[in-house]
Image 1 (cartoon, helix red, strand yellow):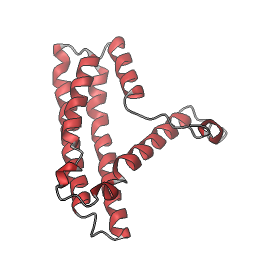
Image 2 (cartoon, rainbow, N blue to C red; image 1 turned 90 degrees about the vertical axis):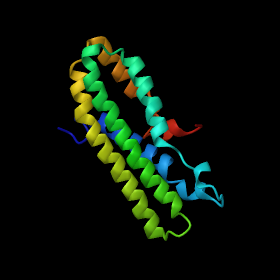
Image 3 (cartoon, one colour; image 1 turned 180 degrees about the horizontal axis):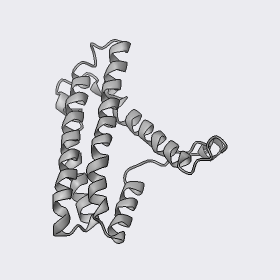
Length: 164
């Protein structure tokens, strides 16, 4: 088998690239956003608020039935827990932005990126359990929701990026 010819290689690389772009865009600018403002809450992105919005949107789009609500509650709790962790870490990053060395900044970014990965790893089994109970129509809705949510399409081909 030729390198890169595995059927999941392209999808895996796109998912990984999307994750890298997301984390870079979502967390790298925190030191820049911290600026000179005295009220740090003006700069804060509340991941918990975003998570609650995402939970409501996902629940509505998935058209879950009462027997699936227990599984959904587990998914929603993981989303809330992950949001709490991200809020704590990003606020810590903002609070220390002016005092961080380049190494401290990289370590802070690593901590956030690792927390994001840990959160995804926690989400996979609980969402998988729910997904297994879904009808084909619900699975299709979930597939579209995850495929076309707020993810950015990333091209790995420079000729496709030109002019964008």
